[in-house]
Length: 133
Image 1 (cartoon, one colour):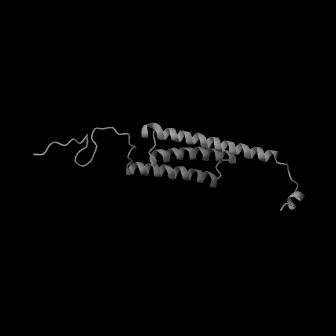
Image 2 (cartoon, one colour):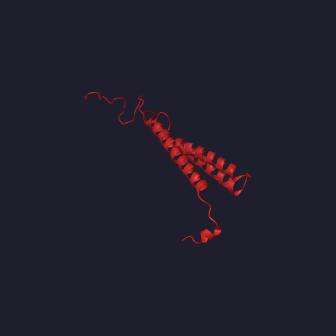
Image 3 (cartoon, rainbow, N blue to C red):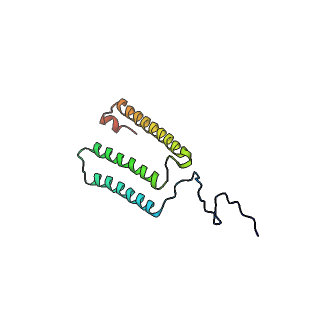
């Protein structure tokens, strides 16, 4: 007669029963298909907005496309990267927020520098431009 095994909550097949580990969520085929369909829709809408010239002002089109891009980023993070506030005790979400802050600072700083370079450049006449190397 053999001694009972101490499996620490696992059965003979290695499955975990009744213990809450801090692992990421496991997606299903339905979850991946939902994410895929949402990603396709969020790609087709901006394409249609540009090709159909839906808005009169290009700035309005750009703002709508940026908003849809932000939504698509969230869709990818949830359905494909399986990120939420519970994964890894929230550290992956904290790293994401830190990355977003760095990207916003870098992009806004770059745009600010380029804008000021553009407005502070001395204008050149067409004659001076012809003599440029």
